[in-house]
Every structure is written in structure tokens, then in C-alpha cells.
Image (cartoon, rainbow, N blue to C red; front, side, top):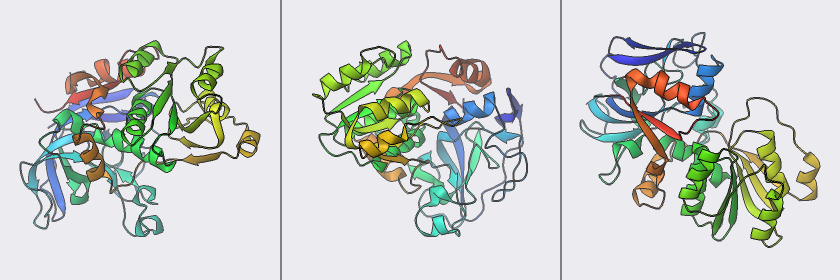
Length: 354
């Protein structure tokens, strides 16, 4: 089968590799339909290896080269003898986390914090940028007829965004501030709107992403580089500040914008991943009685809930798709385009199966 494999920094190769063996008793074989390119994939490509294993992974035993791709939709083509929840022919969205089920986080319902955490498409034998993938039964969730295959490939980043927003508990009527309108920031804004925010204020300096954010029609889109940035937020909130802030840029300026513009006793969640230590004015946390929390991945049991919300139309995740490319073009029209700081793409999907 054809697959995009990561060997190291700036080294992704489109290769013919052996198709995986038949699924074990608790496994599902799927034919991949669409796969998204994630920020984590881009970090691997630019800096790598970071999370792809250079020595045998303690849970899966794999090492690079790794078939990338952990945001994908697929069709079931074979099931193990003990599989009950899906059948051959079902269209599914993939929950890529692979967990041990035995460590304390797993046994207390926090599998996303598994001490041996692995991920299909990052540290597993197969990935979404290969034509066929093998998954555990708990990793597949059926897509309803009302959701497209492309939308199915957006469920994973949609769950990342949803979990971050849920960490700070948006209440109906809240004014929500989102710092950074990349894919996760934009999905966070859409999710906050879906669960009851009265208004979403988005901060984004990139002109293309700002224009995209405006097209979502959720509320004001501001340039954080403008001198009047904080004054504009004060005017919008009648001097009160925002109730909740989602830091999705992964930058010190983005976090500073959240700290400066949150109301007293407001809540900030760090959803964007910082690739280097951030500078923070910790005194503001105390002076304003701010709650500042982290967010990692998603609850691995959340797929059905996110799918239902997307299928209802309230969480229109498919709006994120800006281009669809073939697997042969994954480097030139995918990775290289997305790492360009002046790039004009939001979410690029790879059509894996012709």
C-alpha cells in the first residue's frame, strides 16, 4: 500500500509498504478516506523527531520511520472476531489515542494522560497517511449519514478544541476570548458558540486567518498588534473584561493578551502548545484571582458526543477545510504550505484512497 512515512527532520517519503496483517480479535482494519495534517505533524517535520519514537515505544514497540496521520476518517473493511460495535462497511472517525488501561490515570478515567500514551499516526504501526490502518475497537466511532467523510477527519481536532473549552466551563451568556485563529483556535471559537457563549472575540494578527475568522460570524476579530487592542476589548465588554479566555496561539504575547483582558475571577485555558518556555506575569494571576489551567488532548470517550454535536449542525467543523490534496502531494502542497508563516491555508485534508 502507499503511505507517507516520517524519517526525520524535513524527511517525509511517499513509499510503497506492505499492507498490515489481518486484525486481531479486538481490532478493526479500515480503509482510510481523508486525513488531516495537524500542527503536531508540522512540528515533527520542522524539528523532529519530537514525539515520533527514535527507540522502541514502551507500549507499541515501534520506531521511526513512522506512517504519519492521526486525524482521519475511514471505512471498515475487516473486523476481529470479538468486535461488536462496528461492522464491515461502516464509515468511522478515528480516536487515535492508544492507552495501556492499567496505569493510575487510565484506571481513574483519564486515559488521555496514560503513562504509556501512544498515538496512531505518531507512535504506532499504522497511521492515517497510509491506505490501510489497524485500530483497537475503542478507537473507532461510527459517523452518521448526515456527516461527510471530510467532516469525519475533523472530529479529532474538534475534540481537542472542545476539551480545552470544557476545562474552563463556558456558561451560557459568557463572553469568550480566543487568542489565535489557527485550526484549534477557530474550532474552539465554534465550540464555545455552540455551547452558549453570547459572543466570541477572536485575536489574530495573520490577515488570512483573521479574514477566515470573520467569515465564521461569531463576533469581533481584532488584531493584537493594534495599539487600541485592549481598549477595543474593554469597549466590547463595557469595561468588565472577558469571562473566559482560550489561549490557542502557543505564544507569550497570546498568553499576555489573555491575562490583560480577562475579568477578575475569570478563567484561562492553555490549549495552544508552547514549544519553548513562556514568560508570564504571575502577579496578575493573584491580583485578578484568575484560574489558569492546562489542556492536553481530549477525553478518549468523547468521540460520540463530539460527533453528535457536529452532526446537529451546531458545531460546523467542516468549515475548517481549506484544501484537499492527494497523498502524492502531501509534502509540497501540504507540509511545505502549512509551515509557511504567510500561508493562506487553514486545514488541509489528504485524500488517501483514490
